[in-house]
Image (cartoon, rainbow, N blue to C red; front, side, top):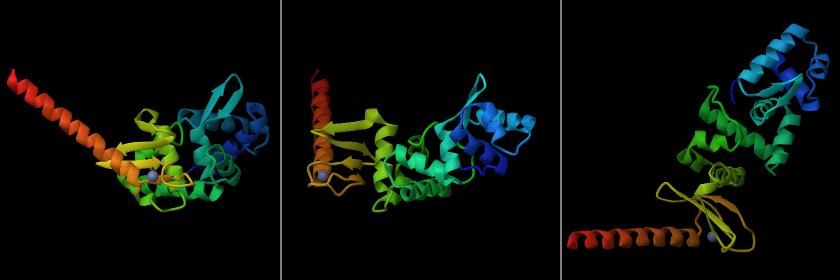
Length: 208
Ligand SMILES: [Zn+2]
């Protein structure tokens, strides 16, 4: 996703935002037909567009790559995840600073938190993109989310890595590595239960 796109690839992707017909896309650029076709095929191989029966559809991976260069794409992506364009830009730039120019294949934005890892995400704590990072974590691993009365937590790295807590006050915030006392209690009690269970099991098997 962070690979630098060349001008013609950008032109094609931009055109694909306004029409899905290959012919319209080609017509709205200055690129010769054969080249336009070649570029579409190359973009399809990289997962940036899907091509089917004369129709070209920009994928979320394509939208993300374009958003690094284009404000229209950035706004569409920001709208999709309910954040400001500035927050989206800051997050994408953070991702690419961390991942470098390697062309990691991703299907959607939540895949990026998997590539970054929990330790790197910690750096976003207290920044304007903390909320987005938590939202992406919740989407990345829906099965990892523990929900309690409308609050949601994700365990990891020897504690709670993400929280959307409704117990701490009026405004529900998405937090990374939260200071939330409830999250800490939750983690401690899980740990205690686990250890107690383990001990009981151990003693039981020793007796037999
Ligand atoms: Zn809390």
